[in-house]
Image (cartoon, rainbow, N blue to C red; front, side, top):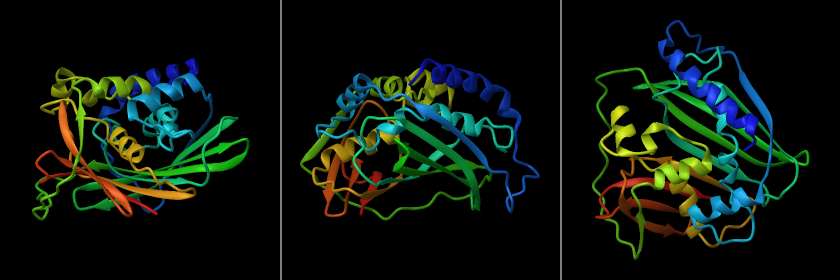
Length: 270
């Protein structure tokens, strides 16, 4: 991430405080203004190696989740744009679709991100953020992030069927793994940094980044073949420190609580 990108990230973090007054009232869901941001990304092999270490990536090619470490400032700029109807704090990352058309390579990286879709659901609004990465003017990678902005109250939580999962693969996630990954991925949301900062945001403990869990799961999935698509659902938070189960399936993987009774993440690979 360049110094200019870090400055934009800091600038947008400050803007977020002033955008807390946004309510989304009178927003036109039928024909919203398209919000788009783009930037040249600086690929740095040293930073990429740090990313590989924290997500346990051992393959030769660049991790398919590494672009997320470079586009944070663009996503932050999108949700702080004057045409974005809601305050950026409180957005919940629900789903992610990653399309890898070919193994990522070093070169001239350019990222374009946009928001053009809003969907009203039972307990709020779903927002789609589409990101496209070109390397040397060729499309290599695309992602669609689904975020939820809760606007309703009194909506009953969905009840999940009881499960019982067993696996021989356990991950021990240290207390400050959220801070460590946040510094590498440039995602320094307070809910991930420490118990103290998470408490300020209404959470009992720091929460591990969903994208770290996704990246760690892909590292365990040894038989990735390009091109491929990963559809990820973030179902329940992982409070730090934690020990979780990882279970590989023929078409993806799941991450579960240590007792195997709660789902944290499900990923389908095609």
